[in-house]
Image 1 (tube, rainbow, N blue to C red):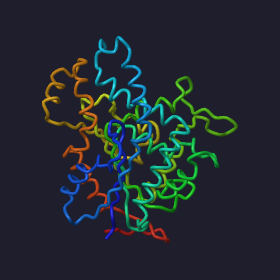
Image 2: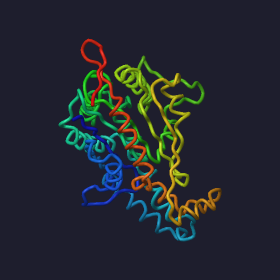
Image 3: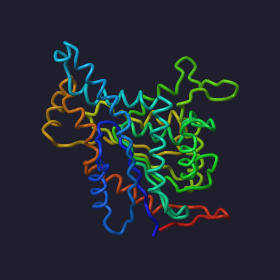
Image 4: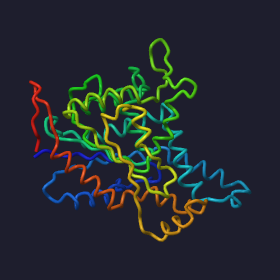
Amino acid sequence: MACDYIVFIHGVNTRYEGVKPTYANKLIELIQQQLGNSHKIKPVILYWGNIGDKGDKLLLKEVQKSPVWNKLWFQRFRSQQMLEFIGDAALYVSRYKAAEVVEILTKQAMAGLKDYNPQEDRVHLVSHSLGTIILFDVLFASRWDEEGILGYEAVKETRNTIFGIEPTSKEGVRLTSIHTMGSPVALFYLMDVDDTTKERKTLQGKNINTHDITPRLEIFLDNLHRELGEKKLPWSNFIHPGDPIAYPLCTLLPQLVDGRRKYIDIQDIVTQNYSWLYFIGSLFRRTPIALIQGGDAHNSYWSNPEVAKKIAETLKITKNNSLRKDSIGELKTIN
């Protein structure tokens, strides 16, 4: 029986030390409940949260020494969501720290995917917050292309595992759905665009915007599109209305990589939870008071039945409709 590998990667605000990562356990449980026993899934949980934790704590300790700290508003938001998100983003921009993250994630991913069958199995990505940025950077960013740099071999190994990614585009397991939760991809779009020319900068024919994922992502989507028999790649982007880091993607992403809208079927999906904080936030959604529940909203996806149901539905659809071309170009169904 074909297996659906679900790769989970977390974002900010899920850090802890000395404990086996459990951040995705509830969501995995909810997905499995939706699928029942007839659907074989294998979770691959990626964890990078211990990198940079010490730096955040030292920084927070220093700023809290200021005599004005106790007079500032939104202290919880400043010391948790804002500090960790901005801190992790700055950390990952660093070549050295990013390479450290890449090495760890590659080992975990390779261990989780080691038994995949390239002819039958499928892989699905479920990414949260900054984890989406990290995952797409590893798979598609040009800053890892220079042979011999830190992280080069790890990135190469990861890319060779996913079907459709150059240079080994005919090898690896097929990516058949993407699910982003609390995604800040729209913010990082600014790193890939020159506001004056709207064109990518080049130097001697090479892309010098090293964080730009667009060229390789476009090639990947085209390769995958042809492999899937002209089917679109399902992409669900979950947004809690009170999550200050989450942004819509359904209009932006096609503009980046799918102008003719033939590669991806992307949906922005607004989620809810019915806690008292959600009720308060909804009453004051146009005021700073809504930030009270910002952190809870940002982490709510991991236990949200709506998210689990949508992911499970997508797995069922891709299982039933999964097509693969054989050596003579005919199509056959994989059950």
